[in-house]
Image (cartoon, rainbow, N blue to C red):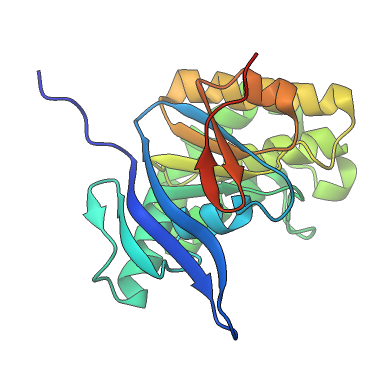
Length: 231
């Protein structure tokens, strides 16, 4: 049986920011993420975690090296193609939920589909309703974000990340703005959705306890991949 294509494959990626001299943010990164994996990225502030997420999220471009996302080589893509690939292949969860206050829970979850057009929004409506019910928000679909707790708002944001049926969900400190109880609930929810939907997750976190529960942990030190510390 042929092995599935990786969701992400980075080969000898470098990222420099302009300056005299240039600032090297990432150095010689080679990384593969397979479908259905839950991968955690940890490292000190300034280690390159956000840069790595931005490159994989197509919010930035590498200085050299190659990045293949869901079988598509990004090196020769123009910005319009990159935007389409980002929309169709990736979901995003941020530390702050960024829900729109004037829209309901269901409307916020459907927002990525609405951007694609009315037909896409209608096609996804029942799937998104079912996901919101699955995460315990069945009786909150018509609520506005201001009527929800912080943990409930982040649950909406997690479901929203799955709106366009992405191959990979990128989570940037998704528990960082929550207390320990809600942080645990949000992490467990991501793990549950990772297993039930088969979507790959890449999570940047400072919480080593959550990282230890991932399928794999990536350690970044000064922009380079480092071996896991000894137990």
